[in-house]
Length: 305
Ligand code: GUN
Image (cartoon, rainbow, N blue to C red; front, side):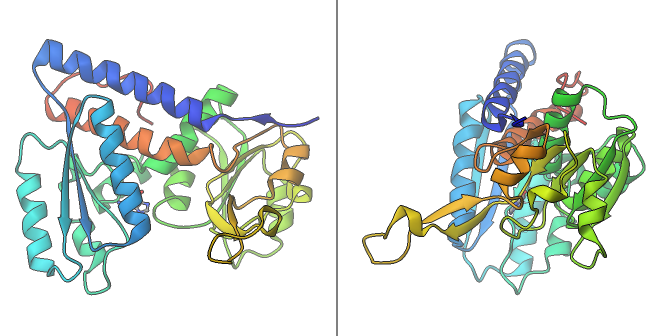
């Protein structure tokens, strides 16, 4: 039977509505407008697209958006000074430094200079530690979005076998922690894993976050498993013809082969329209959560881990 398609785009719209409702309440009842500051160093085209989308969606849910665009050759001291100012600005509740940073900047140092309470990416070492020890933390946006969709689909995840393919700090590792927190039996697989096919075949939940186009074939998927595809890969699509400049047109695909995996899975996220839209929605959710915590107010229901 064909898999249920998990509609991340629709789910993200619902998350944004919940965020907008909570923002409206914070304004009406407490006179507070949550604010998100995004810092972009340099002019990486993909990062510029993301930052624009973040700014647009931030204002659409009624929050204040502050963008800080810095030259590609900004010094570490100058970037740290910008972050320090944002850390001490009470109108800023969330700070996101867009990654990757130019090579001359120490990414770990910069990430750990953001106040943990305003670290809406959940990348600060103290948030990583809090998540790893099951304490209240800021949770990285992409894994949080995956968790929300999994909880919505399954209800309880308790006792399920989950395999996360990929061990990045942004997705793989925090995803594994969140699944463990929901009482899954968790395996983290990666490029050196032996017999990856056999490992994945045992999974009730597969989260693919490796960044390799269509690397998981359908025959690795246990019948009825839930497949969450975090990959966003652009590949050539000769069937679509040529662009004006003569080059082959392209299309986006995930880390799993959607056609064959959806024949065996019970549920699957598409690419595009699955995990992608949830990431920014969860950034907005984290910002409203950070704002509530900063002001000692009740957190929004269903928007945290
Ligand atoms: N670059 C790509 N994804 C992310 C993300 O989730 N957060 C930040 N800060 N930079 C990114």
